[in-house]
Length: 360
Image (tube, rainbow, N blue to C red):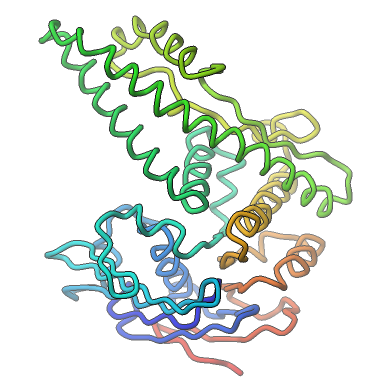
């Protein structure tokens, strides 16, 4: 996969800009608050239909502008494609792929694959289970678009069941409908669990090798899927959900199911979140992100786009060297405030006050 051109109109601090990266490493240099991350945000939106920084799409529209426009020209499997995203204060979001409107955001999944690594992604290692579930869901959605639609169905059923639980105190007769939603959670949840189990097993194998390469084999990283309901099949998952029904009725929410799953990250058998040093946590996050590249390539046959948002300053010289060696076959966009790192064969761009120009 290759980005050939990105054109922005009224996006964040870009009134108008055109960016044509090279197939290899592209260094985007500029001081803070000049618009470097905004470029990556626009590309991320083209992959996922959402920003990685805000849930409020109107924040992406330049101040006092009525709309924002992203036009992305890319190449996938040897064929050129065009994606146009229009964000309007009055009409909301509209997306076209090769001239055809997308009716659902799920149709965007898999059209362009990317891996973004930023300092805040240490949260995958340092924060609670919700961050790792979010990571799981996003990576599975872009690698297997069917997973995205399945996740949407599960979340819709979960919302309906929770609404029902909250209604039962005033409308106890509705309790007769609860088994229907139990079955929905079990049926959809079991399918989600199978995807997650396979994904975590593959991610563990890849991450373990990457981590060993970075750390010199001194430590072993493992990624383990820990389902909230360790069921053997759909029927046993349904049984576990039904077993927890009394607690659900007391707490007025669904207390058990895949929405409570965990992806455990361990170093030599100990939880990195609790026992890992900052250096160990950074190494684990880097190993996981690089493993995303390998996993997506194995599934799609092509390398995804790699975006590194000001992460070099977070890594020591050894980790920087390993990262540089690993990304050479991948189209990579790197934002930085300095060109101090020795970037081999990198095309350099400068960003200043919402303008980007080549430095070469």
